[in-house]
Image (cartoon, rainbow, N blue to C red; front, side, top):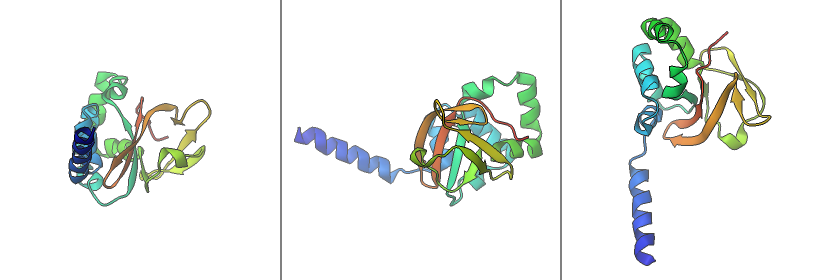
Amino acid sequence: MKKILAVSVLSFAAMAAQSKDIVDTAVGAGTFNTLAKALTAAGLVDTLKGPGPFTVFAPTDEAFAKIPKAQLDALLADKAKLSAVLTYHVVSGKVMAKDVKAGKVKTVQGSDLTVATAGGVMVDGARVTATDIIADNGVIHVIDSVVLPR
């Protein structure tokens, strides 16, 4: 038992020593490849590697796959529109799941996201499927759809 506990403590210490920013945390998860590609195309990688803190509602690869390929390709090619869409998924500050409240929240893009909490958390109609993925400079909440600014 002591040996297992020691290994667990060492594993936790190694993970803490390898803490990562939001971009590295998302890339390391392996389910945000399209998001990482989009952040690069929009020139937002350095921003989300910055000090923050940020709260990111991160669409998975499956969420991006809901967008028809031609539309997604066009979005990835339009840096200004892509930047607006991606920054619409980001809120300033570190908002943990326990602190989420229904209502409007201002995004980095400038528009408001609508958060609903009845029957599970929804952000502009996208379901939050995982919460509180901690990064050095904020937190990631996983969503099942890409949300678009109005």
